[in-house]
Amino acid sequence: GLPLPAESISSMWMQCGDSISCEPLGSTEDIAATSCAELETLGQFNSRSRCLLGTGDGRFEFVAPEFEEEVFDRVIMERTFYGVFAWDGGSAEECWQLRRTLDQEIENCAFIEHRVYYGPEWLVQLHGYDQGLEPDVPIDQIPAAVFGQPANRPPALQEIQVEHDGVVDVFDPREMSSLPAVATEPGAEIVVTIAFDELLQLQQPIFSAKAVESSNPDPEAEPSYVFVGSVEPVYLNLFTSNALHVLTEPFLTDTTVELFIDDQAKAGSSWALFVLRDFRGGESVVWLEFSH
Image (tube, rainbow, N blue to C red; front, side, top):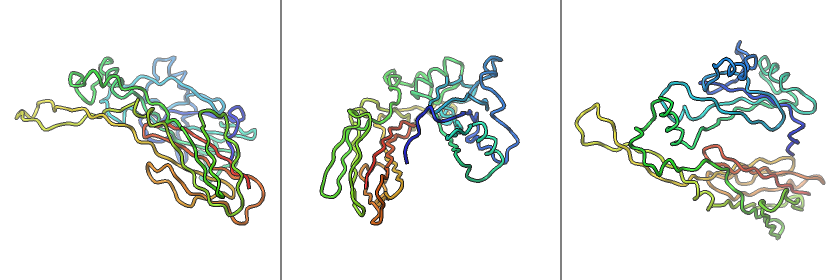
């Protein structure tokens, strides 16, 4: 249940184009055989391309391509990317080729689909308009203040409180490169409460456009829009390993969870992985060790 060092991982990433998936099983297409860099050299790389972005280790960056001529909407502002990972000396390329033929778990290989969101939303709409594309909402109806919507940032973890065996441990992830292990006993019941930085969320409001009924009898008339601001909610996902189990799952915006250690747990460590996320893809991850 521990993260691998980034340099020990072999990875490759592919852009899925208009498709919501790059799943290779059963497909005759080998997306990895087409290089995005080569398409870019030919002036053919865009948001619809299905190609290999590149290879590397556990860290990867790329420059998003321009959009093609199409109507802007939420679907256009997000794209699916497919990642292949190998470890323990394995090769991501080998994992990819195995995945194309095997519908089963492959040792020391992992595969993910990840959606990447273009934003901030209204600046992207303005950029598309400047490129000659048709935005969702007429540009002259978008208030200037809306263009100030900030870029999304991951939710910030402010405090982790762990109650167990009559003891309360409090950690501030912002001041620690790693959290100390929590000493527990077999059979222990544990309550973990995660606090996130609400002020940070308030500093990055999001705006949505709502169409309103018009009194104009002309059916060809443009609809009118009003803009509504809101604060993006934060959600918690939880994963555990070894002798650590979930007693109560987090639900939606709940940030308190109950865990327990097996009565028959052997001496060692178990891990909890907390993923705090918003609905635009921002994530903060914390690993918490429980020794027993």
